Length: 254
Image (tube, rainbow, N blue to C red; front, side, top):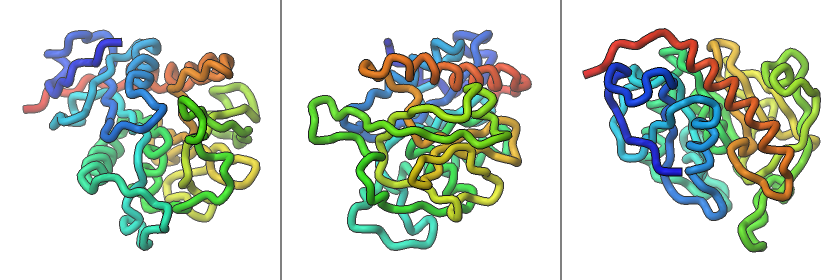
C-alpha cells in the first residue's frame, strides 16, 4: 500500500471528504512490524489514513486518532526509575504523543490506542505501568525468523464495549510487549475491558469519552498462521472508523 499523504489542513482541503481522516502516529521502526498494516486496516474500514510522522497537525483537522506500537515510555512520567529492561523511546515521541492524545481527549475524538499506544493512554490519564512482565508469553519471539508473535487468551469483561463488539467473552490474541498494566495501575477515567489469564490488563475503555479504547495486542497485524485473527480484528477497526464518521464537521485550522 502506498504511504498516505502527510496532510495538516482542514476537511475542506481533504482529498477524500467522504472518508474520515484518521491520524496514525509512528516513530522508530520495530523489527517484525509494519506501519503499512495500520494504514491498510484504516483503508479497509473506510477511513483515510493520515501519516503523522514529521507533521505538525491540528486535532481539528482529524476525525480520529490511532496511537501505534513502539519503544517504552519514560517511566519518570509515572514516578518511577527505569527498570533494567526498559527501552525508552525518544523524549520527543513521548512529548508529541501525550500532547496529541490529550488534545484528542479534550475534543472527544475517537481514539484507538495499540500496544505502546495503550500504555501511553494509561499514563497520560494518570495511570502507571508494570515495567517488565516476567513471563515470556507476552513478548514476540525475537529468536525466530520474522519475529513471530506469541499468543494467549483474553477474557472480555461483562458490560464492556469490546465484549459487545466481538460478541464473545473470550478470544485469542497476539502478544508483542514486555510492559503492561495491572488492575491497580489503571488510570482514573479508564476501566479494564479485557484481562489475560495471568492478570495483565489487555484492554481499557474510557468512561469519560464517547469512544476511546486501548488494546495491548496488535489488531492490525496479518498473522498468516492464525487467519481467524485478522477477520475478528477488522470489527474493531470498523467500529473505530464508524465512530469517526459520526464526528461533527470541524472548522479548518490555520
